[in-house]
Length: 276
Length: 288
Image (cartoon, rainbow over all chains, first blue to last red; front, side):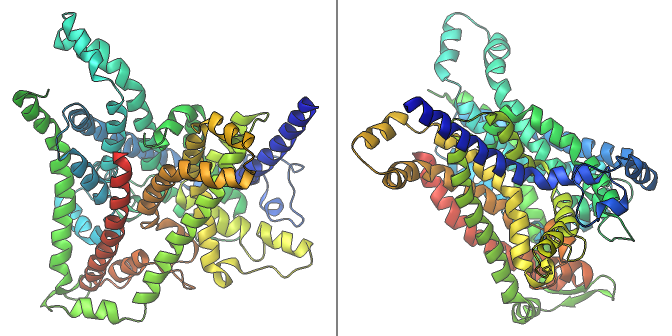
């Protein structure tokens, strides 16, 4: 009897969870499906779900119309560059906060996080002017710097929470055993810190990839990443749902796949180490 | 334990991050303050001299100001309420035994990976379009008149789009928190005859308070800055002009940098009020 109830409950749970999960995922699924339809099928009423003539035509049109490769490359450089640069700057800072904390450590952390609350739009024009003066408007370098600075507080914060988990006693024990500083860093600290750094890297790569204020406002033809690529589809000409879907799929696919494969690390990163 | 030597080393290690963020904060802020006291129209004569507090007065007395503050607060508040409530319910459901939990989790987390420009475009055209959108088909199927989502229910539509993007984040954090909930405590309460609702209210909810705080803090930071969702869908029309968007229009569309900068200062003040309030809660929660 008890067993029957559990199985029954499990069936109900499964049905409910899958229904809601598919409902949440549906807009993405629908976009991917539509990208393989013809424009006429994309708006047909009643909508066709799977029984349509699958075609790759839209992808061809999108590739022809805009230089997808360049947008993709810009996205990779901007997201990757800003994340790596941010980590290089944040690791020493987070490290010293976690292992040599002072009375002010918490205040500094909170201050850093509060800089993220400064509304970007309030400083858009000054940044725009600075970029012109420095000659980095519409360059990848400029965006790498701005997005790195934008995400730096979050990177420091995440790394700090991870590093704080590393027990200091292990270091002392290693020192007693006569480990040199180099051995200490290479063989003990680095392996323990790598999972945290990896999670931080992933989450910030995704945040940088999807950032759509600075990338839209500080780029034009040369340095525009995928956020701008897709924004160029916001003013429709004729039938365009299938092409829009193809372009959307191309913009989100890389990060979606990356996200699925790194789900575990990502979830631990998402909680900012603050929830266990 | 820390020696004088390691303390100064620590300071040096922190220096790059602190100096960069300080510069990132102070340089543009100073420039914004400077412009806010000027009549500055890049396309119509450029720098036309000092104007005192004119820009501040004009920005605040313009009929668009208060509605934009309210719009901002409604969007942030609406999305927070929806994502936290649905997030808790969804987290509880996902924590139950079931088949294919891993896949469901992947389905639920996916919207988080979709860039705001894409999600706004997809929702606007393929779902909310009053002629060809999926919702329109659905409404017609049930014999109802399709809704003009982005003009008639503009705020609801934007809150819905943004909530869809942030629900995964809230759900995952709350799920992580629920998974650490002490099962024995719940079972003990059940044996003592506490009904499900009471168990939820007195054990689950208090346990989640820290996670909810984190969700609210992080989401507020990102929600105050939403831009692409409005840029792509309504362009600030139909009562969806947030403070961010109003400033954006002043600076870029009307090319009035002085006025926009004064607006920027107001936005910074508003953000600081909210930040102060949030930091106090989080600071308290961090000690625990």
